[in-house]
Structure formats: structure tokens, C-alpha cells
Length: 461
Image (cartoon, rainbow, N blue to C red; front, side, top):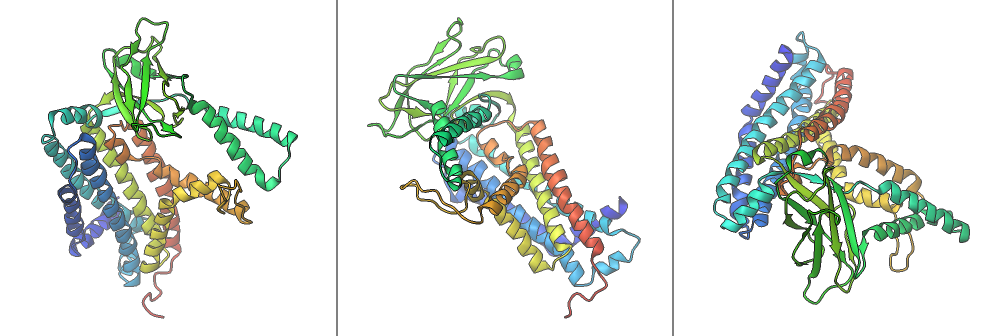
């Protein structure tokens, strides 16, 4: 361990010698302080959060991510190219210890920088919050500067898929279609089945039964929040729709009928409901009545959500920073793995290309959902086809499965909406991002570094 720590200290000395630590620290503080000064919020809790939390944490993540890739690619590749690594390799130290020492040095450097930037964000957040109007401060303390747990209806994807296959097989028997058109027909049927479970026609009602689980034991006497979102195919005259809500089982004595609300479509709405409306099993029943002249659609994934208090903001903020730290540890392993075999420019290009794949995951997901990489004609109902679909679509699925291991954890979104980041989520993020993905790149990098001939003149042709 002493040898690994020695290499880590040499990495620190190199970062300090080239003023890298000071430059990155200055840029991070400038991003934290400068963004709120350049971009003014609108005086609301939501606008305040967008500037202080979302923008600053996103800027910190981007700056740290780019600097981590640059440093991790450069610290090993340049040592090899400039023949400095040979001096270290002649010492009684294994190559895997050199590799891990450099990774530990970069990770510890990131930990200090992230703690510095995170402390500035937290302090600025508390200071600027006191300047908001009293009503907005109340919203901020209740909905954002808090750790709230979340509960939704059980996932019914399996039921939708089963119903889709049943309808598809029946349709294929009655009116066969070309084999290449089956994925598009399946997609259309699935969307229709989903719409049936999401749509609330005029004059009808929709009921959600959400189990609060073990959280029910500490929620007695505490008000809860509902977070809802709906869509509408038609616009109303005033741009909003009337919503009638009833919370609590109809046969129970604890039922609350909320005052009529005027809600806009395609946006999230949060409102508080009285406490103790769930039954002894923790089941909360929510009923929506649609008195409008057009149907409303509540998406299955984000149409209805129950939020409840679970902890304080400071510890939740620290857990969010810890997940960002896990991302930086993964990027350090990626950069070092690339530099173990490639030159500095090529390693940097490779690492940035990998990042581009992550940022393009939305496009890959759209191709997987449609079942093809070719564009279709939605107006004519013609599906796209490509001879490469049989190879690219499975490859895209594999890439998305790997990317989602790290991308599925979004502390910035959770913190900006007051969501709780639990210890179990942090542990799972560490296992998937650092141990699984980072471990893969570490093993690949160490193997390549062990096999690389360091005695070859690196700077000559």
C-alpha cells in the first residue's frame, strides 16, 4: 500500500507543479459564484433552484469530468512517451501498483475539488435562500431543501407486454402482415394498450392505489405531497383544465375532497394533501375526476407520484456529491485504461468518444424503441427499415444496458426536486459505477499496461 500511496503523491505533486489543481479549483469556484451572478433567477423557489443547484452542479460535473479525463490520459501516457515511467518501473514496484497509484491520486484530487465546490454551493444556497420572499422560502424548505421519499403505482410493464402480444397474435391470424412490419405493428399496439391505461375520458375517473411501504410507520400526522403531470390532445380556452381530486378510500372515514384546481398540461404540479389518509396497510387511494370536455392522459411513469419527508437536506446533498464522485472515479479509470495502450492524443480522443456515446444514449434509445435505425414516415404510417437493423439494434441494446448502469443515477435531478438519495441507492451506485464499470476498465488498463513494452523509444519513429 505504501508504494501505491507514493505513486498517488507523485500524481498530486505533478498536478500542483503544473498548477492544474489551482486552475481547476479557480474554475469551479468561478462556476459556482459566477453563474448565479450572470444568470438571474425569477424570484421563485423553482427558478432559484434551477440556477443554484441545477446549473452549478451541472457545471461542476462537466468541468471535473473533462479535467479528470485530460489528467488521467495525460499523467500515464506522457510519462510513457517522455520515458519517465522507466525510472519508476525499475524500482521494486509492480505495474499494477503504478496504475492504481495514479488512479488513487486522481480520485483523491477529485475528492478535494468536489468537496470544495460542493461546500461553496451549499453555502451559497443557504445565503441566497434567505433573500427570497417568505412564501417562496416556505416552498423551498418544504419541497426542495429536504429529502423526500417517493412512491408510485406498481410497474405494469409485464401486463402491457402480455396484452400487446395477445392482441398482436390475434391480428396476425386475422390479417397477416410482412415480417419486416411486425415490429412497427407491435409498437403501435403497445402504445394503444398503454393509452387505455393512461387515458381519462370526459366525465370519467381514474384511481391510483399507491403503497407507502415501511414509510407509513413514521408518516402519521405528516402532510404528503402529490406530484402529477398530464397531457391533452386539445387545448382549453384558458390554457388550463379543471381537476377534481379525492384522497382516501371511499369506504374509509378519512377521506379528503380537495378544492377544484386549474392545472396546465405538460408540466409537473405539486400540492399538499392532509395527513393520515392512508389505511393501516399503508395504501393511499387517489381518485381523479375529469369534468372537462376533452380526455386527459396521465403517463404511467410520471403521471402520479406521492412524495413524503424522509430526512434533511445537508446529508442528502452530501450523498448526491458522493454519486458525482463515483462518476469521476469511473472517468479516471477510463482515461487511465486508454492511456495504458494509446498515446496521449489518441487516448484523449478515445475517452471523449466514449463520453459522446453516453450523451447520445437518447438517440440510441429511440432507435431501440422503434426497432430500426432508419427514419420512417409517420404521416403516411410507413415504418423505416434498414439491412443493418439485425446487427445494430442488439448492439444498441447492449450499449444502453452498460450506459444505464451509470446514467440511471442522477443526483442533480434528485437534489433539485427535493428527492431523497438513500444510502442503498448510493451503495448500489458505488457498486455499479465504481466496482463494476470502473473495475472493468481497471482490469483492462492494468493488463494492457503490463503487456506494454516500456523500453521502446516512445518519441522516435
